[in-house]
Image (cartoon, rainbow, N blue to C red):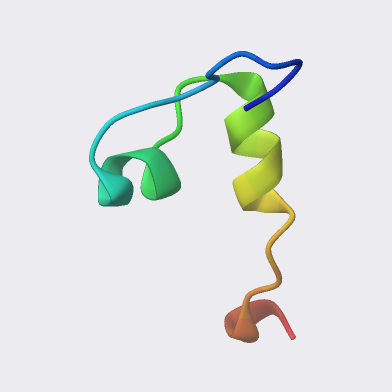
Length: 37
């Protein structure tokens, strides 16, 4: 959610691995990954 509105919806794997909205993409990009540590 962003500003009280639903930003993205769908199957979890799809939303996490291929988000369509720039906001959802920025959230998933902010998650630390072990491969990059």
